[in-house]
Length: 293
Image 1 (cartoon, rainbow, N blue to C red):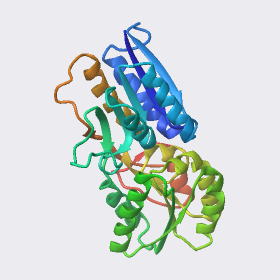
Image 2: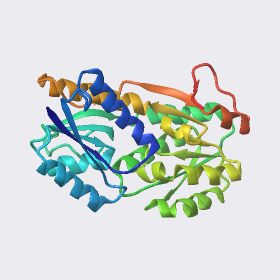
Image 3: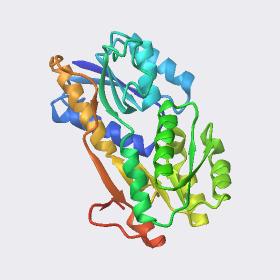
Image 4: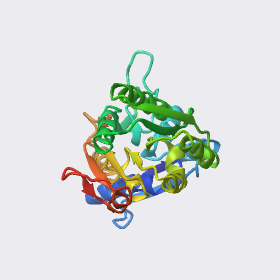
């Protein structure tokens, strides 16, 4: 019997796809509750950081065989709390981007799983320029407390400057502020909104979409799950496959295959669009894009 912990930061439809993929991968490799060889201790902090720390402490105290983490803040918390229990991250950036490398540049010995770089964001912005060739201003919101969000913002800002797009960005601290901040962006005559890989954005997507739809501003993103929740299009990691890839690695660890395991980059990225929103905004997508709604 293997016992694993899953440390979730919040309840979110986008992030849940990664969790689903993780457990299906384990099941495909023979590990499941149904097979009576896997015990799962699931903890969800509901977006509260002190609760996240307590939940992680519980998993460490329970002496689980591994801790799966989703997203970035869960990964950071787990790595800070244990040096002996393996941590398998998903929906997290490359360890150095998350501030998880040691002073000598080494990755913590107990950190595994699947990460994303920010290079794909350049392609995301280029695709927006292709779809909206006349775009002048793009707006976005970001949580200053999230390293991944700040790094993504810097990457997008650089690419926007290269393409002659003015990026208007406003900080947001929590989901309670999202509507007010989004409305402030929309008042600046933006041509499109970009939903960053940011936990506040994940938690507030419906609010963002509702405001932008009312203003006639299309929402683009780098997260496929957000297209299902109202964004027009995305280029980025498939959340389900991200979790599945992490689950395959965790299964290797549970089976005793530990040599050679290390954090690896996500394999599957896709171009997807929301057919309903494409009609609303009169946007055309080529055959490289896949309709997901």
